[in-house]
Image (cartoon, rainbow, N blue to C red; front, top):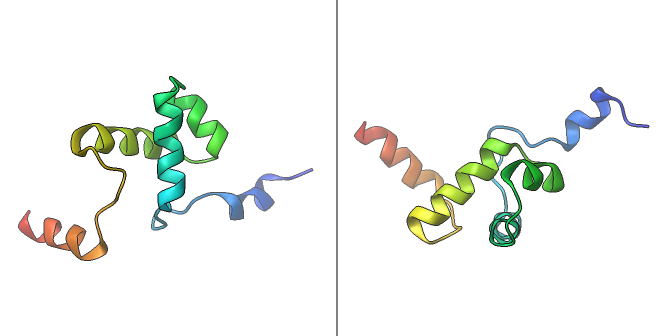
Length: 78
């Protein structure tokens, strides 16, 4: 039986990016009409991350993320 302390290592940290396969799995589940909550539970990732992946996919038509340098440049513009 897993306790909360042993399950922490399985959770995704804020600074960790999802790999392309997992992002593609999120999009695939979305295309199969799974809810954000169901996808989150199924893949063990936060619902906010699932929502963000789906939103970016709808807006940009891609599941790729921006590189670290692109994110930094965007922050500098603000």
